[in-house]
Length: 195
Image 1 (cartoon, one colour):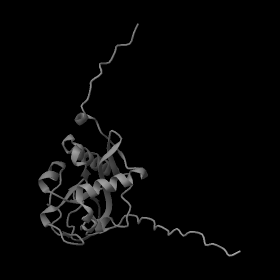
Image 2: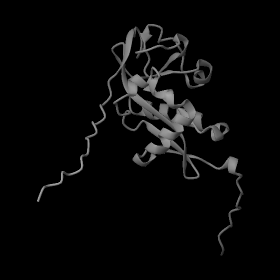
Image 3: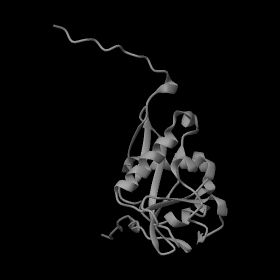
């Protein structure tokens, strides 16, 4: 008896699947190039970057989307205190412009939020476009009394709670609380010894 033969379906390049997985150390250069392409080289001066500088993303919450061996999407979440309440800040979310019609951004968001909830986090905050992020449950309802360490548009500061009341009464500055990245040691060439 022969096994039934599975029909092969040719996929167009546009329909090629993507995979979302944990970010790896080897992704760094591709991630940085993608972020530069999406946000420009001035992205390091943005307000939310101040919450990420010198910090490691939250454990298990740095994701990469890969398509045909190339990193085409990224999202990371970071520990913060939102007016004294523990939360995460999401960002940046970036997708290769050539892949924007494939649902990669939405898939990254859904997986990142599901992973944050599964890890017991109570709330996620982001700075973004309310109409886009509303479909994931984000609103400005609980962020009206919160501030960021730099300029921002008040109606773009959004949050979603996984635990009811996690951000009730939250007010004040959002500050980073995540683990600090290890300082890089300067590597010096060995000194030549006189003979």
